[in-house]
Image 1 (cartoon, rainbow, N blue to C red):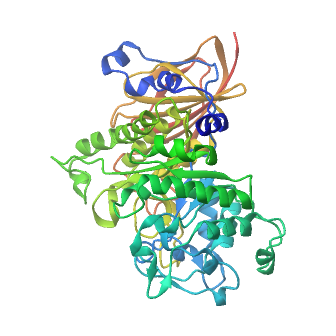
Image 2 (image 1 turned 60 degrees about the vertical axis):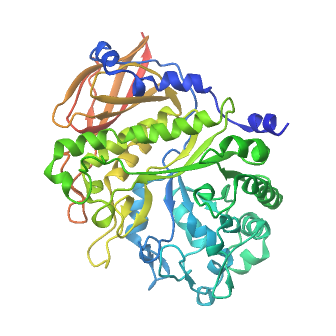
Image 3 (image 1 turned 90 degrees about the vertical axis):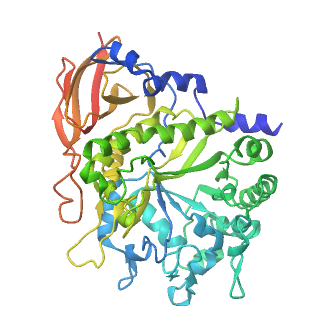
Amino acid sequence: MQRRAFLKQSTLAVAGAAAGALGAPATASLEARRQAGSSIAVDPKPGFELSPYLYMQFMEPLGATDGSVEAAWDHSRDQWREDVVAVTKTLAPTMMRWGGIFADFYRWREGVGPRAARPPMLNLLWGGIESNQVGTGEFVELCRLAGADPLICVNFESDGRKQYMKVNDRVRTADAREAAEWVAYCNGPDHPERKAHGHAAPWNVRHWQIGNETSYDKNGFPLETAASKTVEFAKAMRAADPAIQLIAWGDSGWAARMAEVAGEHVQYLAFHHMFDPDSRQKPVLRGEQYRRDPDAAWDQLMAAWQLTDTKIRGMRDSLGARKVPLALTECHFVIPGRDRGDVLASWAAGVSYARILNNHQRHGDVLKIATAADFCGTRWQNNAVIIPTPRGSNRAYLQPVARVMQLYRHHIGSHALAIGAQPDGLDVVASRRGDTVYLHVANTRRTRSVKTTIQVAGQVIRSGRVFEIAEDPALEVSYLNDADVMQPRQKPFAIDGVWEFPAASVSALELQIGSK
């Protein structure tokens, strides 16, 4: 009964077999793709619905490791830094997530109410002190400024991790009741505590995550305990607001059992993917090695999408016939090196990320929330936004991953389309909204352009636009050049369908179609 109820709640439009058809270009053999010729063949029939949350951002206070929150906050003016707000608006994330392992020792009431009364806290994982000057209200404010829906991770009894439950006689763990009180504080129409803090209108936070990387720690909750506690949390939180959408933890082979036990109480299952795409035999992406061997570095980066594809397919396979929406609420490269990998500031990484985002779209029948990087920070290169400190004349800027996210986010349809053929060297996905067909195209050739003809079956292309980022793969972005590089250039599309994609480019096409 629980399983049937859960499946009924699912909004999936097409089964996994259909996803395989749409995803065929990603897994087809090289020879088959060569035989496909030089055309991109698009089937205009709308397939599964694409979620608006495929370009989520993830924000977690990372203490001494990376001032992602404290550095983004202007303490002298009690507001978000204007440059951070401005660049976030241009990125235009559809969803922003608060918390991570940080949630295991976060007590939400310490971050609400008068700032002078908010107690600082030890960041037990990342080091340093968090001031709690940024809390629930401030996070929701940033989401509203950026036009994003907030997603909040609750303290899930510290995910069973005893090292975070109590420190210096201060209890850091929190139960289902505290999670439900957080929901009520955010969403209750006349919540007295929130109103006393100067926020009369409810924030209507619709998405909440229960459990974060619970299965990754052998000292945390085992599966059966986590599943039963997920039900307990879900019931309590939904009693505070029946309209919320809940995400349970399902990684490490937990998905099927979590769906069986807690399925009727949650809408998504979460998993994470942090990976190093470098070769163990000949590491080329670590430190500054990639500058010495650009060919090898390019090959490694172009193959990185396969690791995420393996992870997503593993999650799908673990569910069997269950059609459960998945939420990839953390995903990024983890490359050893100065500032977690200088290579991620290069345009070569931007093209690599384009392939990863294309693959997310191919799995869009089941993948409904996804990201490809952390949101913002001062040091880690796997952030979407870098915040220079001290400010001075420097301003926050977008990393290559964010340039591609921004491009794709602004040019995408509502339903996926199948690609029947594509030339070797191009990674292509398609979508449609009304009479507009959208293509996301990455040229995976480092030094050669690819000329092709784009055909939409049974349709003529009446007009079109191409938004293109084409740079030297070795080019790196920083606060010194961010306004001048990796910017999309708009070009008119030739209605004869012939187009040449520059080497190492990422493009978004908008094609207006009509019947022949």
